[in-house]
Image (cartoon, rainbow, N blue to C red; front, side):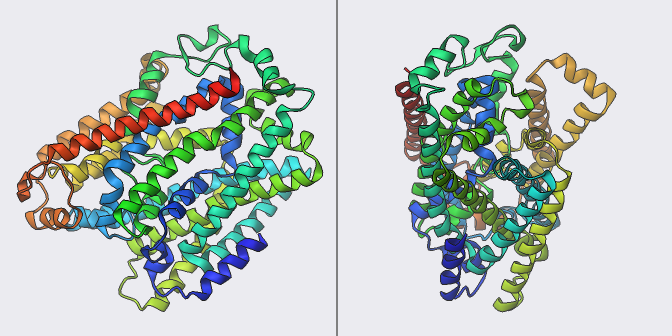
Length: 537
């Protein structure tokens, strides 16, 4: 904490002069700093607990619920990172008025500013806080209320240092915090796996190998009939064929968005944006998960009495029970660093959406803009703390977020590469999942239909309904005017279906991009699974 404060004050001395400095680091971040900052943000206090819970309930193969997103992540890197950088916008919501025009575009920009910067942001911070509260309860032996007030104090500290330093300071601190967090994770895995109770990696294989827990791929079938993680065919299709491109999800937005887009736009060049995003995907999938998976496997052996809704605590119990005092302090600092990196980014990014796209303070002087931005960050922190008191389940929030964005992804992808996408396409794709989700979850006829669909197919149903609605909407509403389309094309230079402004598709370039995307996806999956094979063979 002291180091974070010191570094933030040093960056403050470099003088943040405007919103570009505050929210995008002056668009001058080294690519490796931006890339590591992305992965540090995804490494929150809840992430190791969530992975350990998945492993405890569903085995290693349960991780395909998030491993499937790799294809979408690399699609973003190869096809969209350079486009985001070229757009020159400050926030993803600002892109709306670059790509679309008229009152509907102004409405959508403000709506997304509130929806993403305020509502979704508060939910994300809320579930991260819930996880940190659980960690503090176990490690310090305090009550839930006491743990909440400790987290509240941490949030206020993070708010103050992040508002002082801006994105550049946040990103540099992220690099240090991620390094510390990974050292702590590997240290924990070593202490737990080498303990007499586990007996090394061979002990894990001996205890769990015949139960299907170590399978890298799920079995298809009825989950109630086997100890292995079996998955209904509908769920498998949803995960592997739809989820990675169809769903909006924080940090895994199809085509880029959120703090991922923010980091891409903060780099020095469009090539740096590409390199940063590829680095993020490699670190995210190949480096981070294995120490958490190993600890999660050990927790199955060590704490067999934990109920399903308590499995996530197995990770925290291993810290409490197996680390010596010094190492325990290091891991506590690692978790604290992971928590702080996520919260600082969420507050900075959320404030950028509120100030730039909702309040629209661009006409004010720089000093006033920065003052308002810092006040908004503080207000967001207070709102997120209130939301934290209302949340009871991280899993329930995750499910809501997935369903609420089902089907939106394809519009977010195609708006860059197809001129015919218009503002009404995106509005309909944003609202339809909400309405369909509400019908399936809260009306008698919808719940009956959801039951008849079978497990996993309700998600596919929402995606298909949303896709049908936005396609119909696109073709019955007018295209964007030529001035808007030409302005967007001239600034971004997307190599797609833009014949309306005189563009001829370079199929050779597109072919190279597709080959690179597919090849990188296979390579990163191969590295991910090879590491697991070497550890557990």
